[in-house]
Image (cartoon, rainbow, N blue to C red; front, side):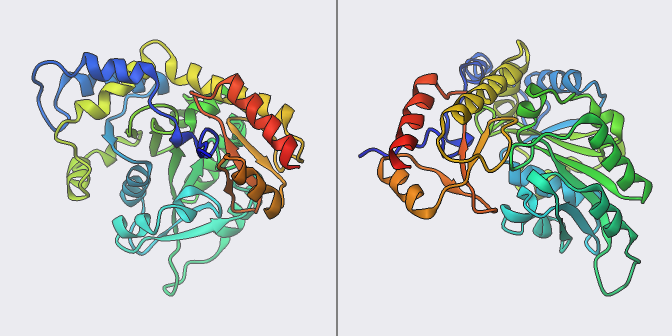
Length: 336
């Protein structure tokens, strides 16, 4: 039986047509290298318009590189980053933030559905500095979270404000920011709230591998290109990291495709016979399912993942079809 990766992760989907069209459109002819080309400039302008922020934009090839290099820019080696304990930067990046941050630490904070709890943030900030530990130098928020939840603008601004008032820098992992925006989050809130550095996700939304690093704090701009070069992330043919963004943003596909993924998740949630482990807000569906049932689902050809809280995660993408959702819903009925 052929394995079905339709719902294993949104990174399993191919690139949306708009990104491929843009790659073809800007492939012809010659262009300056290392980000000094018109394609990279135009993509940066579209991202600045999306965020309503006058900020430098750099493009890298993976979310791990984007987050690790962004955090290294705002947090010193003897400091640590406060983030949700199940955030990607803590759970899924194999120590990359510490590597690029020259030993920078990570401190996990609790909170439901991947959202940092304000009281635990306050408690972490209240701890006195001590030369024997790495005090916090930055706060990292993920929107949408690894559980598909979305910060409300007021909640988001409050957490950023709390961190900034204690002298911390603020980073946002927006690998699925498009899904958050499609669910109602205002993309312009990041600049207004005082976020220093923001990663805007492309790969999970439907681009070829490309992420945008936005330096909302312009003082971070000096030698940031050197930081990327040192890490092997200053692409010689930068236009091929930038072009997909023109395809995604010039006519609204970035949000429209994410809205489709969110809608498919809601359709799937209505069909599943297992209890939902978490509310469905964006493109993720989490089920309370025992190991035997998950094995039966795998045996039926459908690949899923067991998440950090032991729930089973099913992800929808820009490419998810109603037919595939209905097929999976029927398969779940069978394995119940």
